[in-house]
Image (tube, rainbow, N blue to C red; front, top):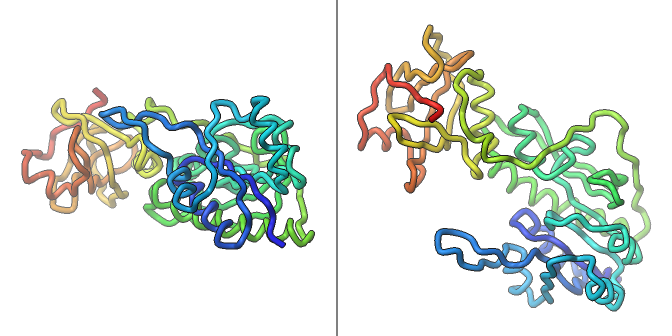
Amino acid sequence: MSLKILFAGTPAFAAPSLQALVDAGHQVTAVYCQPDRPKGRGRKLLFSPVKRLALELGLSVRQPEQFAGDDQLQLIAEDQADLLIVVAYGQILPEVVLNKPRFGAVNVHASLLPRWRGAAPIHRAIINGDEQTGITVMQMDAGLDTGPMLLQHTLAIRPNETTGQLHNRLAELGAQCLVTSVGQIEDGSVEATPQPDNGMTYAKKVDKLEARIVWAASAQQIDRQIRGLNPVPMAYSFLSDERLKMVGSQLSALSVDAVPGEIVEVGPSGLSVATGDGVLLLTHLQPAGGKSMSVKDFLNSRQVVAGQFFGED
């Protein structure tokens, strides 16, 4: 017999999990999303990815400003759900909500807990040069990503992988892991394992101030920064007073004696830039107000020569 499930999620990462639950035959009684927010230059109210999917699936959508209000608690009680599933909902839920369903609440988290608890585990894994990450399905408690683990699955981070690319792979893996865990909860075979006491790191939310490139850092650090902040908020620097987002990069084998930020070679494959340690090849850029393009296309409309400098402002 399928479980009656309340689902709480908002962004694209959560959508595959909702779809997988429905495909597995579980009864999703309601879907909670964050309220619609104005976005873009026109500041239009846009539906979140999970809301769009829920409506396509004919599911009931709820968007309270506060999940834990008295009216919402009454609704949850009336739902008589077996399980609350939370996937990147965007709001910390109090214990009174987590304990309402018969089997409590389960969360899908995009890291190998206890590493990278917090808001930005995918960004932090790439920025810090982790070679692997994964999915943890855990029983939720009052702490921040501290609950006992129901299932973990490791995923290798590919060379030159961006946060956007890794996000998509983890979203699909998370959906698969969630269905497995829900099945184990349903048949009583699930086993909860406390998180280890050691190895905990905190994945703080990405700040736009982190996007400015400091060329005195190493080529490896800057490459991780560029990949880790792609697609949002995107690392950037200035060339001849033009603000350029850094879309693609790779480490170069060039060995030069140059000032950090100096362009040491210009070619169809990219711009080779000196750093505090090593040379970084910039392969794709995005001008302000423009689209992402290869450096080859960028050079068709701009004169860039060796000896010019990328600056911080």
